[in-house]
Image (cartoon, rainbow, N blue to C red; front, side, top):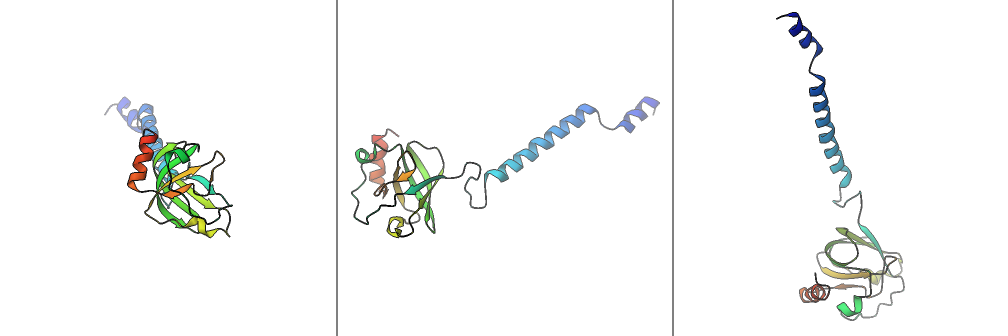
Length: 160
């Protein structure tokens, strides 16, 4: 081994190789950290989180008419979703289709009036059509259980 080879071994890897290795470590570490930050233990995205809506507090407990595209067309937020959980005063939806507004995969519907428990009679696993105003309020009769036929009508009406 000559003096040049001995000096090269003593210096270690080339600066370019070191830079490439450091870049690879940053990319890999950033991807893992990003994945951890995006999903919390509940499976909901913590970076953007679920869209929060609030149910109207003036519910009367009366019977609602079946949802129709014409009745709910005026609302800027309208989606089809499945209830994934009912936790206290909140109902969580997995959005199947946004008919108007929104792009979140999940929605949390919160009951701000604890004296109005009748408004949160949602069943886990059932499908609903949910409408909300611009300020995120779901009106009385704005969240309705929806059959496959009802969802088909809404998809046709909104061309989805």
